[in-house]
Image (tube, rainbow, N blue to C red; front, side, top):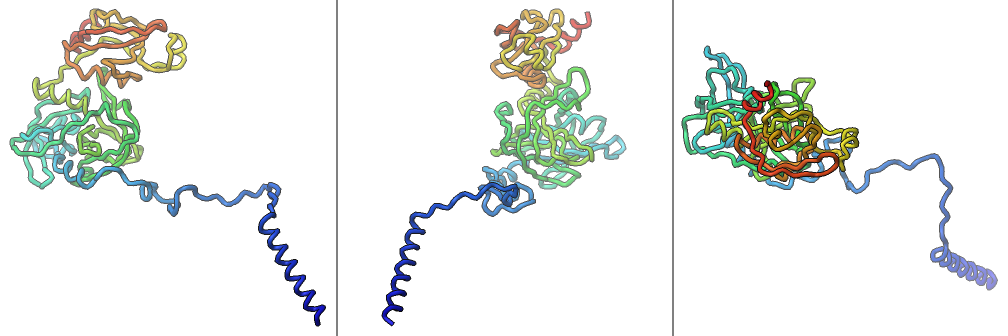
Amino acid sequence: MRNIFVTALVALISSAFSFFLFQNYYVPTTPPPTDQLPPARLVDHGEAPVNTNPRAWAQVPPADFVATSKLVTAAVVNINTLSASGYRISSGSGVLISTDGYIITNHHVVEDGSKFEITLSDKRKMEAAVVGSDPTTDLALLKVEARNFRPLAYGDSDKVEVGQWVMAVGNPFNLSSTVTAGIVSAKARNINILRGSYAIESFIQTDAVVNPGNSGGALVNEQGELIGINTAIISESGGYEGYSFAIPANLVRKVIRDIREFGEVQRAVLGVGIADVTDELAADLALPVVAGVHITSVSQESSAAEAGLRSDDVIVSINGVRTNSVPELQEQVALFRPGDRISLEFYREGRKYRRDNITLKSLSNAVSSFRR
């Protein structure tokens, strides 16, 4: 009996000692690699659902979109364009930009119309008159005879950045006061939608939902400032497919100010033929980077000719604002009136130059000198 007890005690002590050694000194070996990969899993997303819209679980926008929506919808109107007989030709949206009833919209919303019926966010209806219109930028200015409106304030579209949150407000399919949100997808887009040799396309591209009827409506930033006028979509179906385009507010403000003061746009031009810079061209012209706008021709007696610009010069900035593409250069020049002076920087034969106090001429002068 004593032998059994001693044997059991030794076994127990041996087991305890073995367990102690295993816990403290055993290092597992790495199994040999196999062709079988472990199941894939999400990393750093917690309990995020799979196969759903990312916006359903991604971080919410940083702004108070509820307050911004209330501010903006009160300043966006519905526009019905009617023929002389009262038949509706088109419909769209407009943005109140003054307390006394001036309304921005698109040229294509009001062209060929005889009567213009405005419906406010509070469902009041009024008749508007066209103050002026500019097909080269697809902008128009209307006026209703009423006061005490709450207009939108302009934002600085040059400071808009790709990736920032924006809201589009308008009346798609006559659904009044519709608000959608998205981000800025790109800037200075040219989609070749406007007709004419001197049309300006330097659109802000967003993925905010825009549909027929949103034309002329507001694109605003998180503070509710007007940074663009919604104008176009790219679509194979005719409806929204993720590509919306707005005229930048800085260009809108200049065009609308001209129309309000003069009844038409005071358009200034440099008087040059231009094209985007390619990598091959950058190498041929000894440019440090593939950027800027290539001058292909210079009109006689134009602002550019008087400033000493030549073919194969590459303009890289106007008044300190970079011009890395044709739309960016066209937009910057379009912000000025004939007689205004600008400074520009350009490359010539690999060296950088600057010209100050270049006096811009009118579009009519540039066209007449070009035709000589």
